[in-house]
Length: 393
Image (cartoon, rainbow, N blue to C red):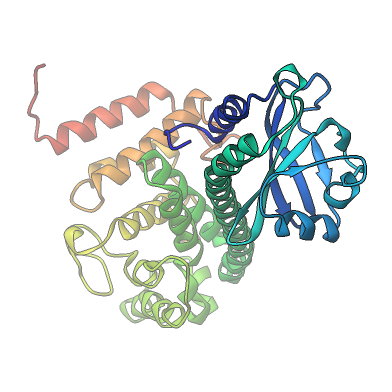
């Protein structure tokens, strides 16, 4: 009963022990649940007509009678209805004796005993032995029930969290669409950055919570642009210094907006503020170096740049995927995190090879680069990171 094994195995071992202790040919072990009151079999042996599982619904009077019993109960025609219901899929008349399993006066299960060897009667000695053994059986059943209840509660909490994350996803997608509504040239940008970032995070081996955080940060990274003058988004030439400062301030404004919000992910405000920082300190608003920013900031900064490069702007046409990746690799590690860039290359290659379960690019016809060209870029990136050193194994 105390061995490290699954409960069904333990239950079968307990049935065998009960058979041996009482010289019993037929034994069934039930667990009890009180909502609704129900006995449900977990192991049985010897009964020719015992269904699997055997189920016996109980009325409050049955529960009270079993919980009040002081030990195993010999059954007869006049006592069946006192302790058991005939509304289940097993006839109470199969049992010659029942032993309620109780912990702290509460019913946790039941042992149903049928015929003994040679059809002998249950005498006081056998009943005493069974009653002693059933005390330990009750402990084992109770521990199993507690474990099951805990697992059920954890499962319910996980489902609740999943529904909350679904709610967050839907709400943040709506926010992302609203952020990009100011000009046709940036429609869908925040949604793509969030999805690109999540895919890069998956390629980097981040866990599900970190991937969800990346997607949400991507959706919200440009939220400060709601305070930027709409005319700047449609300007067909480069921004002058004053206009650039106004545009750059969207990182600070966005940080102010999200800092007062309690997200499930703690790095959202940091990512909103710092997604334009670059590895060499040339970014804004704080001129941070690569080691000064967290991995979510690095991933969002990369995917934000990649989507901007591959999207049309009023002052330039979009780059091809290959040209954008080549430029990003050229600027790594000076500007971008090598691990994040490697994750980006991996996801693009999967799309190019048609092996992505979830396409990196949701639009048709976007992938205009061959897998071999991505491999060349990845080799070039590795050569730069290792400074041309070669390692033999």
